[in-house]
Image 1 (cartoon, helix red, strand yellow):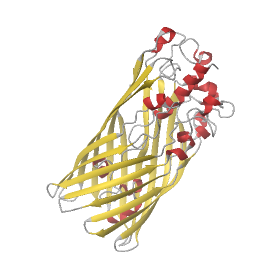
Image 2: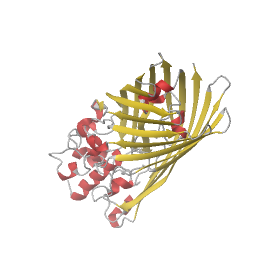
Image 3: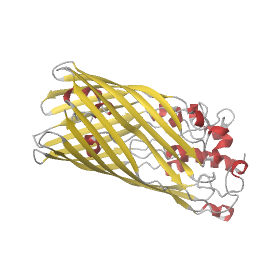
Length: 436
């Protein structure tokens, strides 16, 4: 394999992996439940819905009996573009836009107070993931990166052939038990049962570096299951202030049988993470909340391994092995979230939020192109409202904007070329609460 071909494959590895990310939380969702979606996820110390299993299990003791459902309309826009290539490489100057731009993400939660001290509930939520599909090619025969498999077909943006993309979904079921240990403090635990669904296609140029070249791309959908646990603490020391903290272990996932030649160790674990938060209510109309979240991406090999591992030594560190190439997300991510709520009438509450989180990959010699192709906006803003009925049920509506983020830098694929990615996301969420 020539040096330029090796760099091309390395470039592809980063492109495929990093394209799963969409929010300031890396590939994690911004928040779950109607209140989180209105306040940019700043809900660790806010006990106003039943989605405690996805943020802080302990606050379930302050929620009451209720059932809640929600649906998010997720509208991402992603465009990759290559320019400035000259000579024989000029054929690779083209752009491609993902054709999939609308996804429906459901969620549901239930809670019940068993006694003055114990509460039971369950949360089902989408932890993260994304679907992309790029159709455009060079339009020139024989320009793919794996002629043994692709023959003389035109190359797609990732040097494979045919449509290129992936489909990654993570669903988490979190049964939750909370215990009020004192008048003002609660603790909680939520076992996490995760199900992943994944498919990759058009990535034929990756197969030469894999230990299982037949299990890299175009294998249809595959399913993996895993388990973890989240524990939490919630306290309300004064009527106008509440505080909370939660910790989630790494969710260890089964290997993808059909794609064990793509991910490091063949699996895609959900990383360990923890969050702390405070909420203040200076008067009966206003409330403010602040969250800080830490996600340990570097501890998951499929996320934290260097992108150059398989490039430097594909024999010792082939793609799909424990030391194989991956995201290069070696910087754990800290996210900051702030939310505000204004109760304008006894039935209407208006909320807004803002979230910020640095990208988990650094722009280095091994990752500049990968950073460009990570559709991972770092700023998000949300706005929404909740309207209560006379019976205490409620309608929730929220909109969010993942602010436009673009990357531009030198290509590791085509010498002298420049690559750019522009991405932004719009969301609309609708939810309903039944008070039991």
